[in-house]
Image 1 (spheres, rainbow, N blue to C red):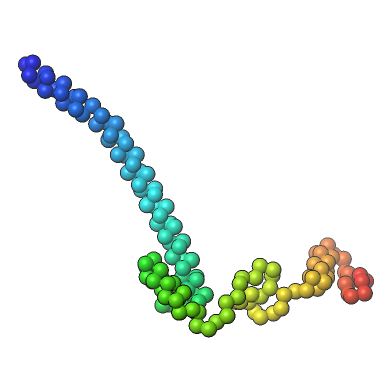
Image 2 (tube, one colour; image 1 turned 120 degrees about the vertical axis):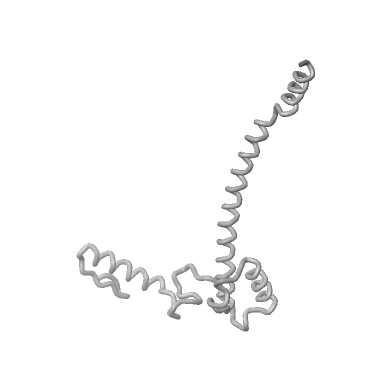
Length: 137
């Protein structure tokens, strides 16, 4: 009887942290799931950005739409080694101009924009005002 009780106490002592470890494992599994989900979202975002970069370098959308992230990395590396096919790279335009993919029209001049804004405002409020170089009529 004493031997069985001693063995029981020994087992209780040996496994007393079992519940703590089991709870910690559950927490870590939950954390791992959320981290995997976050990594998945970031990989999708990265792949989309790489596709856009490759499209900007002249790649065909059909050729890259089903590529994996590793394949896109390889293509992007190759594209950086070989350049962009002689195309002149132009920075994005945030001033309202046409930019690379626009219609090719020149940006609006400041005076023309001011005239347009005044005319739109007056038309919105029901006043007929004609703005010219000489002033407001």
